[in-house]
Amino acid sequence: MRKVLSIAFKDLKLRTRDFYAFIMLLVMPLVLIFFLGIIFKPMWTSKPFIIDVGIIDKDNDEISKILINDVFSSENLKDMLNLTYLNSDEEAKEEINSGKLAAVVILRSGFSDAVIKGENASIVVLGDPEQSIKSGVIKNIVDYFTIEVLRRRTIIETVSDILAPYSSINPQEIQRLIPQWLKEIEDKEDIVIVNPTTASKNIKSIPPMDYYAVGMGVMYLLFATNAGAETIFEERRLKTYDRLKTTPVSDKNLFVGKILGIFFVALFQFLLIFLFTTLVYRVNWGSSITGLIALAFSSVLAFSGFSTLFASIAKSEQQIGNLGPALAMIFGFLGGGMWPVFTFPSWMNLVSRFTPNRWAIDGFLKLMEQNAKFYEVLPQCIVLLAMAGLFFLVGTSRLRKRGT
Image (cartoon, rainbow, N blue to C red; front, side, top):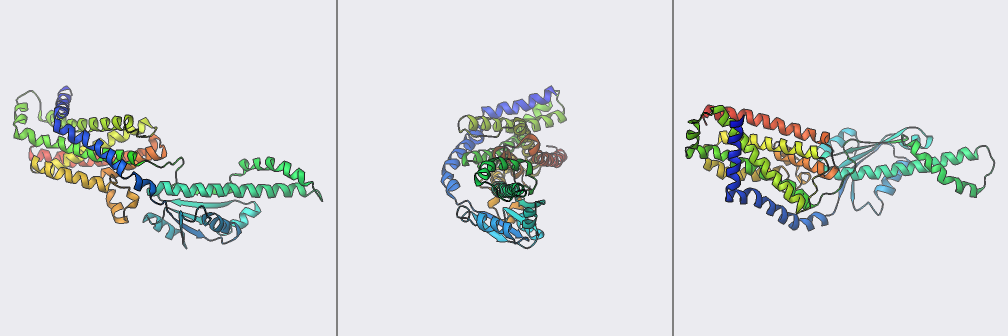
């Protein structure tokens, strides 16, 4: 193991001493993060915030009309909400899965009657996970509406209970008792049930500087790992590999050491970007340290695996040097590093899921936007680790067959 680590740290040391590599792998992403964050800030903040919302109103009665006509179509919300009326749950799921709607609000038949009679009634909110901020806004609107319905019904029920034994009551006494009646709302939260499938709590908007810190940081991981993979061919050309074979180091140790070196280079680069953007650009990477560590290691492993696979396909270091940056840029764009994926058409959204960039960016944004915990980014980590395993398996098999 000591020999493997020596080879890995040797590659890391050589890369940190290379001035061109330092400029390319560290200074360039930091410069891009800064300028993209500044350039796109006006567009990011001034773009109208429009939420496409679906409505399934099978109730079509008094209270459901209040929600649709007096709340969703109110002066405060009508310019922000783009309402689309749907006929079925299946149509709602299809519209959400295609990314056309951020959320769908479903009002079941008999909803208004159930609320008035004091029976259980439910408002269902379906949300698009790719548009968590927008679906979260709809959930909050429905929450506030729910509380208001509960308040009014509680007042009516309580007043009726008080008036029932008497033929008359002092109006001043009613005014005095209303605040006390409203406290009963806390014990009646199950009267109207809000069932959000994907909307999250504590969602906050993310500044462009923070977004591009994630996007560029992830994209340049592929630059770093490709540069590491390039050294496999470089050592062949410079006969370094032949000289290493004269030492008491096995081929297996050499190979594992090279792969570990690629991992160390990428991890070191990402750590520097993380520290610099946190301290200088004031980027907030979230509050979950374990989530950040797990995502960072998973992402670096996935990109290291892909670079190993790329090295096994490439015919020379020149090919890696020429195609690698172009591939990193394509992956960066498809994965959402240049622009948010919810703006993509549905086919591009689907294609982006086959890139490690997409899963890494989704995970980091979840930590930053939603203050997600470690277990909430486990799906992204698992997918990245699965990609890493597949890439390493195919890549190392091909490299061994080629004798590289």
